[in-house]
Image 1 (cartoon, helix red, strand yellow):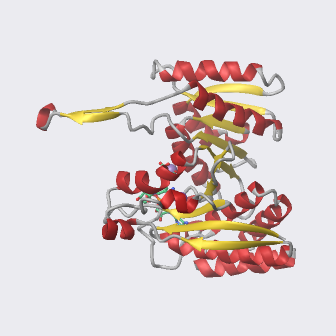
Image 2: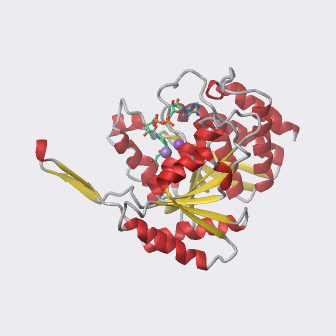
Length: 352
Ligand SMILES: NC(=O)c1ccc[n+]([C@@H]2O[C@H](COP(=O)([O-])OP(=O)(O)OC[C@H]3O[C@@H](n4cnc5c(N)ncnc54)[C@H](O)[C@@H]3O)[C@@H](O)[C@H]2O)c1
Ligand SMILES: O=C(O)C[C@@H](O)C(=O)O
Ligand SMILES: [K+]
Ligand SMILES: [Mn+2]
């Protein structure tokens, strides 16, 4: 019996609504498998916790999480209670950095039965490898002076190690896919970090002679994701560019409510963290209509990470069958509730 210890952080808003649903799916998957089980430990760290304690997680929060095999997180942020940069850096980004989750893997593909806003999605299927530890997300900088003289400085930080690590991951991933990597750059406008990014990309490519490469400025790339998404296989991007591209990827899939993501620790020292691309969606919280598919697909990525690929693929097939059958939440044009969609996935999983 393989036993996996999962730290569960529902977080804020719809995070709480979709995490419990994905946990139900994981429990069913484990039952069906027979040879594996999950122990879930829930941590109530979110913006309410902050209002009570003045911090997003306790001082020893990371120590509490560390022994787990993975962290399963919903979403963080409730701007009416806590400024977004405080909540995000206090929990989500804190965990990503402290646990050296240096790449963020975000697939996007056209799903049968889901209407993409694109006229002809041409079966697009790509994965964004988002650098997850540095780049534009940086604490280096500050604010000086006040009033009309106020200045804000934010330094982007790109290291050879961090850049190379993300690119190596992207090239290796492409070896198992369609052998193509696109680099998201902006070396025409950002004159230090992006020419550096391009150089590291070129260097990396030399080590992967079987992989075809393409370099596209981020502005054009954002447009290409809309006009020709089928031409992309693996895309490697800096932290901010990857963040933006993956919301575009989610949008062309049909809704940000279905997009999954995995923050991967590559050195084995700390657990990886699995959370969907979407946030806490304050505009639909409490209505019972949050799409649980992003969180459930994220659970599939966690199963893959544990080496349970067969079960993971069953889960993705179940998701696809449910969406194709028309059982969808309103963000996808359907009438089903969060719970109804989850129940349908569970029933489908039992059939396979
Ligand atoms: N990884 C994270 O935890 C994460 C990611 C993005 C945003 N946030 C935080 O979430 C809060 C809201 O941010 P935002 O509005 O920019 O982005 P968001 O992803 O929460 O919402 C954007 C839009 O997508 C919709 N949406 C998102 N997830 C959905 C789902 N599962 N089903 C149906 N519709 C869904 C929302 O209703 C909203 O209209 C902020 O505090 C932000 O900082 C957190
Ligand atoms: O900026 C972030 O990384 C938070 C959120 O937008 C995400 O995509 O995870
Ligand atoms: K999230
Ligand atoms: Mn984002």
